[in-house]
Image (cartoon, rainbow, N blue to C red):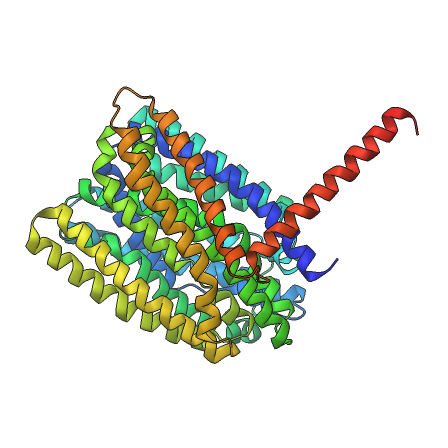
Length: 511
């Protein structure tokens, strides 16, 4: 089977998994948001950010090293398992010893018990079967479907039970712990492995992953520092609204584009020695990312009010402006694929430089925005100011990433920007219709069923975007682009169904 067919098949499996994960995640969010308070989410956001930042310092990126390796042997997997368990022990000690200081710094003793529990759970993180990466190496992803769906179900079941019994933040903690435990157990059923202690292959694996480790450390600090910074200035209630907004705004884009993004690193790795094919593949992928990310972000921003009202309840409505702004920012950030391309080419040192530059731009702008918001007035303005800083940083960093892609591959900025223009124009038209025409008209009737309003807005958005994107494509002279790929895909799908219908008909006629 060709590389392209494997990518499509793998993406299909991941898409199916993402669909189920989205549905389960929405159900979990709906239930837990009504059983818990924004303050609960705020506390867990601070503790989770601390654990994530400390974890990133010891991140080894060994799975990526095994994927990128041309021919990993048994001793490479043993080395990965050993190093991951050494890391887990070290990480547990770091989180545990930092817990009293974090609780004291934020003036909340509840953080001590939360972080100590997280430290204990971290001890098991290194036990996962390292042979799971073999499926990604071969672009086989049905196991991802099994793992993603089953672990999510385990997490929501445990989380909801704890929420019903205790009705506090421990529901979020235990739900996350259940997910991790289930994944470790399931990994040995899907990818059997007999654990052995050994470090024979450490030089080969770490030579690839060391710069990737540094870049992921900076990346994690970049993206998980928000709760730590804002938590020092605002109450847990407002921080909980921000944390929920960040999660909800990113969910449609993260889950919608996940099937594509997860296949990019192994797919690019397969053709890394043919720059012509690699460049053509990257432009196709970037076009597809833009074609999906921009309407998802713009559409979710436009329907945020009825969606929050329906899913979370009126108590979460103050988070709507946060969700709208973050959804637009995240959609724009998803319009390039620098990281999997650089990883496939082994440019991990360049990735570290990219992440260092990104954090040096994002965090100062986030802090400056928060300070400006605070001066305007209140904690809500502080959060919105910080989000404004994130937006400015996104614009600078995405542009810079495109420049780095040009230096790495030779793909011009004009080519990269060109694939954004049609999806951007179509998404803007859709957002204008939903936010400024349909939303005021539909939401003015307070007695109208909120679910019906939401469904009507989503359908109108889909029809508007599809119409506008293909109209723009036709006016552009029908170039060979992502729109053409989608047309070919549905054409092949139609041929497949027609052939099967004809077979069924002949079988029914006895011919």
